[in-house]
Length: 119
Image (cartoon, rainbow, N blue to C red; front, side, top):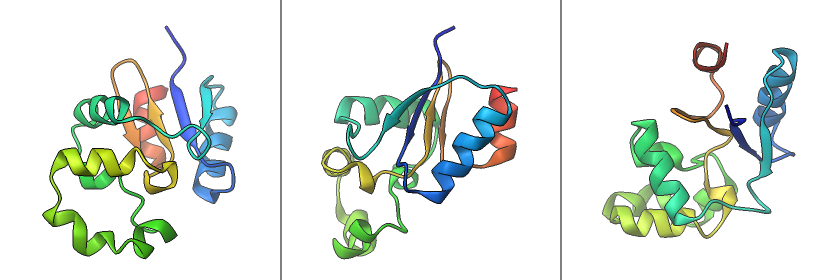
């Protein structure tokens, strides 16, 4: 099986915690810096569909960029196409870490959820 893709921002404490968890449990992943190589619209669409989560969950709502763009007020009026396009412009708008496996997508780090899918 191909290694899951781990999208993270190295300076993010939650990403560091998730990476350590992966290492501690011997889970091999392909690491991608979400700021240097942000996800494209097609990837985001596929991951969103596979995750079964609302699209809003893919936004880093606690990020500076999210707040500076006042997205809390703007998102409800945006179409899904507009939201995908916006997410694809900057990796720091995307909730992290993201873990993309063959048959799952995990958004954010919830240890129990990761344990269920990976161990």
